[in-house]
Structure formats: C-alpha cells, structure tokens
Length: 361
Image 1: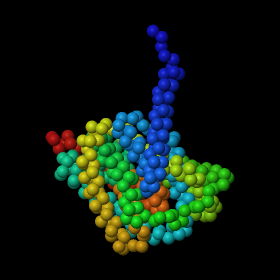
Image 2: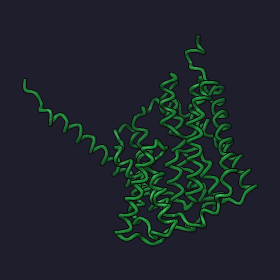
Image 3: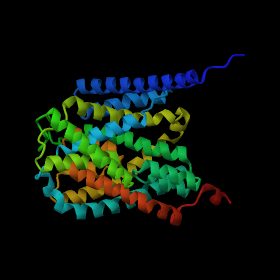
Image 4: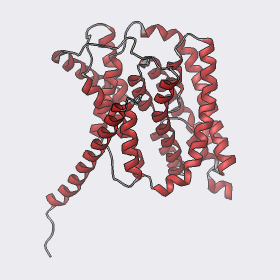
C-alpha cells in the first residue's frame, strides 16, 4: 500500500484551516457590512460577531489564527491611540476614585453572580466563583482546569456575557441618546505613508516590549501606548485609513463570535439560563456603582457605562472606538479590572471555593 507523502499530509490540513479562516473573515465582513448598511450602532463589530457566532453554533469550524488576531489587536490599539489628546487627559483626576470603585464593583459582582449560580442552578462554589468573575477568560479557564471546575459551563457563562454586552450595549446607548454622536477629539486626517510606517513600527515595538514583560493584552495596549505617545505629543497628526479601522472592528467581532466554535449546541443550551441570570445580576450590581459615580463625578455617563461593563477588554475597547467614547478612561479601567481579577481570583477561589467532588464527599 502506497503511503501519502509527508508534504501532502501537511498540506491538506493547512488548506482546510486556511479555508476555515477565509470563511470566518467572509462571514464577519458580510455581517458587519449588513449591520453597517442598516445603520445599527456599533454595526461592524456587532454584525461580524453575530454572523460568525451563529455559524459557529451551527457547527462551522470557524477560527482566527494567532497572527491574524495579533494584527487585528495592533490595528485596534493604533486606532484607539489616535484619539488621544490633551483634552482627553483632563479626566485623569477622576481615575483613582473610579478605579477603586471598579475594584469594589468587580468583587461584589463576582460574589453576587456566584451566589445566584449556587442557589438557583446548583453550581459548586468554585465553578460559580470563576464564572462570576468578569474578564480575564484565559486566566479563568486555566484556573478552572487546575481546580477541577466545570470548564464548559464557565466558558458558556463568560462568552455569553461578552456576546450580550457587545451586541446590546451600542444599541442601548444609541436608543437612550447617551453615546455622543460624534468623536470629540478624533484624528480627522489620515497619516501619510511615512507617518503610517512610523506609527505601525512604533506601536509594534512597544507591543513586543510589553509582551516580553508579560504585560496583559500586550498587543492591543502596546500599540495603543505607542500610538498615544506619537499623537499626544503632536509628532503625528493623522490616524489609520478608515478601511484599516474597519478591518480592526470586523476582526474583533469575528474573534468574539469564533469562541462559540468549540462549544456544542447541547452544552450551550444547557447553561444558557445560568448565563442569562448571572449576567443580569452582574449588570444590576454594576449599574449601582455607575449611578454612584455619575452622581458624584463629572465623568461622562457613556464613558462610565462602557468602563464598568463586565465584558472582555478587547471588545469593550473596540466599542469605545466605534461609539466615540474616551479610550483612555475605558482602557485604564478595563486594564485595572483585568489585573485585579488576575491577582485576586486565585486567592478568592482558594478561600471560598470548593470543587464539586469535595462537596459530594
């Protein structure tokens, strides 16, 4: 019996993966353009996310390779950094207070969602605590594996939270008239070819440096810092071409939607009620803190809402870009929450969590 050449054996899977990636991008682009044509708020990111997510749930093997994900995150970071100006930095005085309240809101939201999942849906303490912790999904997943928690249930709750927020938040802000209708300090001009080269090179360099330092979300925040310094100092006036910003938004939406590709429909349906209920608890608790900050500070309400939304950091920053919301304020708060969750969650689980096996014993 003749054997298949090694080169051909590797070529077939590679071709299939390439086709899967192209399908993901095609669906994301089609969904984003459809929502944009319908003039829906946050259309590019929401449309791409929903189109890819629905196809993934239906069983399509959709995914985004690391190199493409990193490229999208760098473009998003550059776009966010191009919005930086001296006017945006005037909100810096409110950061210590609001970041402190964000930490408290995260703590309350985690325990509130955890108690709900335990009392209403019978979850064990460890799985409930990890599912209720907003953000830092990769760290939460690794901790769940280590502690013997229900990884699939946690993934459903965490992913559903991001999907709902990314789809519903832009629409809610637009319908209520809360989101600003135009960017207050956006870079109108497009960078020249030379400026664009410098901008991309500096952003990638800072991103690589942060990656070496094990900084969270290094690709996006590194690019954002590099772009912010160049724009804030006035060295570069223009930003990315509109089509590049559109690519970043569609890419983030497709990335979020592709998270459903590894979930079976049966698993998703079995935990959807728990996901919706815990999401409602988290939103109610976050809304209380948002109300307090809105009544006691001069920060714009839309900025507070997106900064305190218990969603994924990349998705919320993408929404900040598409909804013309202060990226510095939102970025500082979501990074702070990411660090807070990463540092405190292992200790909280160790003190309060009990794997299901221990409970049964």
